[in-house]
Length: 200
Image 1 (cartoon, one colour):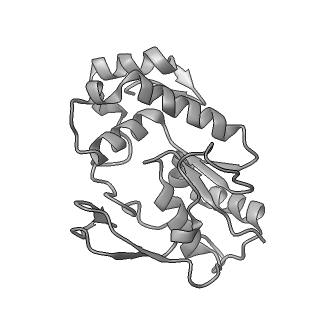
Image 2: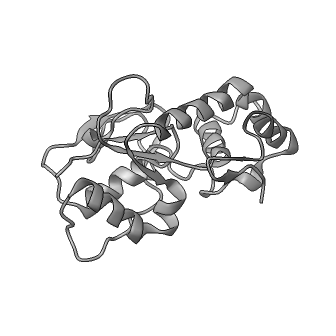
């Protein structure tokens, strides 16, 4: 049995995956930690910087896959445009999206995902966690050997984590203006890692 560490690029469904594992598999006790972030909400509720208990905290590995040896674990990633938009909202929606993006930030996502995909980790797409939940959780069970808590897996609320769903949904490609779309395509092309770079 493996107690998995969860790795990700920021705003890619990290807490959603950790919560899904926490609520569906038998795990050791005391993997929670108290945390606080100023001017952020937790699980859809404003917490105003107060300490809150993150039940699955010790499942988290890192957002920087090159910072340390990871060993076995799970990496979750998401459509880059949805990731960028969610990150922009999390950062305060300033400056304008096409200014905030910057080529270096887009390239950083590209390089981080490429590096992560080269590691011997179980790869989980955010979209599969949402739309193909049962099979995704079965893959996690087979990879980790964790024991399920019930006979079928139960999805958790998508509004889980820091500032969950403050960006107004989970698909944001249609919210990109032409300048922002052109900038992303300039760096990533029209398709990357199985994702089409478009507003459709």
